[in-house]
Length: 212
Image (cartoon, rainbow, N blue to C red; front, side, top):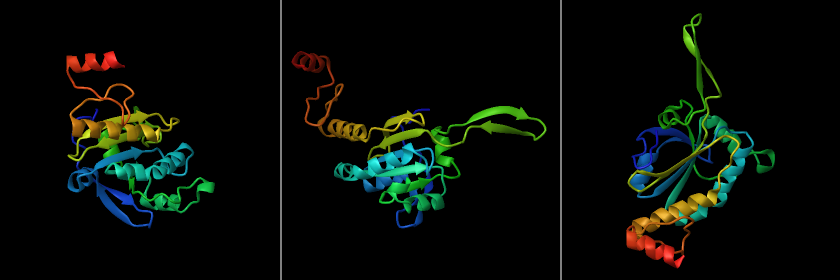
């Protein structure tokens, strides 16, 4: 189920700070109470290979997101303790030392299940054990959500495990959505900050296409 155009689930999830503090974050409230946009990105596992490159890439761009009134939050199904161990592992050893934004620890998989982003497939019912056995690691795909100041999702995307994200694309999407909010214009293909947008009517489209 897509959450685009819908309110983000209003539930709290454990999180770990870079200082080793465990606390709870409600993404819906982070957006609505603070009147900020939120970028939430899920990754499969701590202590893996593509994942630390993404966490460091978001950290390097953190200032750009902050300029755009946007909170960055990472998430996986690892426990807070595993997050803390990873935060205390150096970059040279595949760790994420230096990452300062919160990381959700959805170890009970409540939020990931609601979002339906878990890599899990059910197997045949096992009569002897009287249960359903599952295949897969029951971890998340690389799902990303952009949430506006009213708690509504305006973008979501899901990558398969081997495919790392392009952080610049999320900055472009935030710029485009902010332009729509502030100017009332719509953003055509390949739009970037500083380029022409257009009015959402037949004349606006014709004028844009004629000049481009």
